[in-house]
Image (cartoon, rainbow over all chains, first blue to last red):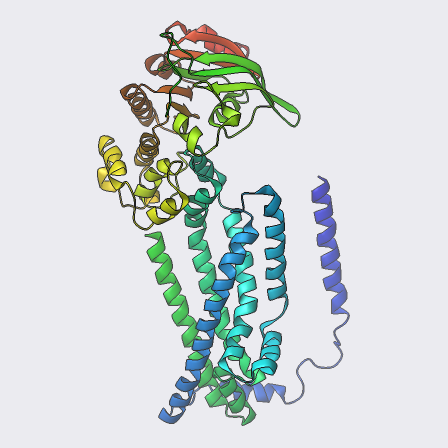
Length: 260
Length: 258
């Protein structure tokens, strides 16, 4: 009852904050500046057709490659960070009660620190440290994504149904063996599908890395936008879409295999 | 493993001496005492909240008693290492079988060996199953040998029930506990479950303690029935002497019929 009341209060406060924020918008001046409509029209009309000349397709393909490579390498780093820290943070494998809480706190704190900083900020830091090298892009992606993956892995491993674990325990399985035979197989399908979802996000993030000068689709988009070559922009966006769709297809293939 | 010397024909295998358990605000089990001899098939009857599950969980080592002592074959349960030692003495079949659906059947069966395997062996077995023959034989006896490599969640309820029994066969504890083993099953599967459990128990001279409600199943498959009510033993009878009147009183059915 008390919880319900405080929940209601919270909802009310949030709704109030939203309404109040509306007063911050300057409703008097038009939201779209003069000429904005025309610019938007030019941009969208450039989709018919996008620039499909062999030359530019070559450029787009060449730009797709580093974006995909950074996303794959970044996700690899993220998974390598996420699995050990996520397992520790789930608090399910450290059997000594004296160590469990410290281990969970330290790992949760590190995960929190990794994902509190946006990948672009990491990118600025790493470009400053390593220059415009692939390493900067891969680490800038891998660290915050590792923080996100670790946190979700920890939750998924922690929140598996307790009944199969209890049954394993009565079969003589220690917490570590329950982890291997219960938690991991029970959480794995969700862990994999979340990782794939994050892989899609990593592709978008890898493209955005161009804002700090790293090569890839985003960099080309920026160049074409500067030259107002909207048809080229659309080609690049379609390549982007293609990548994401491919990852999505791959992900559903893997998930179907897992369910079979 | 050393078995406590059997001195009298009806040696005590399990002794509960004044065990009690309470949860915040509820006395789940008043101090109760009883003994069980090897080979007995004990039914625990009683309405919901009477303490059956609490008692079974105490016997399985899933819960610790607030007071009292639980001895199995002369060893104090609380002093026992939960994995290795306890798993040889006591095993349990759960209400919904509680298997790991995403694992192949073979691993769910071999999970019965986890108490005896080293951690490294347990991990390796997930890739190259050890003692595969043990699982194969258990499943063969239960007539589902062809399911060995299937994903467990793809099996029917009746097949999953056999996988749970196969796990127990592989674990081979001396006392088998069953928490409402038939409550979620249709009558045919319920009868099947009891038949398989009793077969397993009789084949290897094990002891069975199961929470059961049906007087028919109790009389057919058990040798003794303990009636629990509000955490206390209301009666403790040979199953053959169980009458409708005794059960009605246990479940308070009279009051509801008026």
